[in-house]
Length: 298
Image (cartoon, rainbow, N blue to C red; front, top):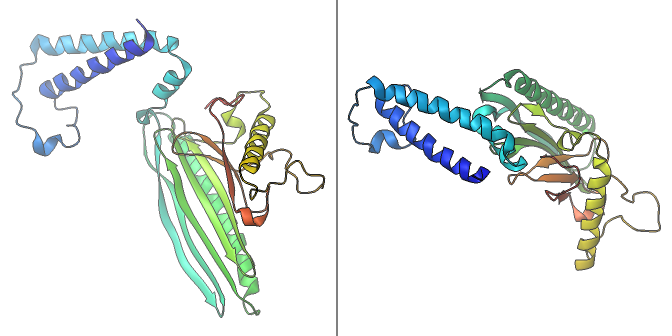
């Protein structure tokens, strides 16, 4: 029997377990929406029926243990990343205020990443990741506000907005962004991204998403260059600092601390602030990496 056929069969069996167990035990909760609409169930004597259920579940778990090593990589990863085995987070607003003097205004609305619920053995790591994100957000914010305060009392217009938001919150990934938008004679936007892998609570680096020993910086950089060239060929208004005769700002390779996040579709997104790899008029830029990128093991 093929792996997917086995998984479908297991799925059918597990549904019967839930239904039978709900009839014979009050341990399992009712499914969502069942409380109000379901008619009273007839209580079935336990006796040998419960014993058969227990033995059936044990036997089926043994089947799952035998099947898992033979699953393809994507199916096995999906199973080990199920929400029941990982941490859950929430972004709670903890700072919300405005500083103003004359034509200078700073607005701060920051969230703190908190561990909402946790199942499995990732609680300690998940808590450490949340604390590291919160500390970094606080440090960057304090630096920006300190610089803003130094400008108070001087002439001219300036506006600073600092905020956080959840970018991705799916079964496998939790990504948060910190955005700083400043306006004076010109405007500039800077973003910092933080991504946690839910199944073990790990705060990810770009290197963590690739196979050990792989030249991930080269693989990502070459893919970005390919997308840049393709975009410029399709639209002359797209301008990137690439393949030019002038030295200086030309993009050659991503940095060790390259900004990235995982989007809602589970794909790796490489991010650049305004002016990093193209004129400021191009804005903040993002490049979605293909799933088949060399060395990528998500």
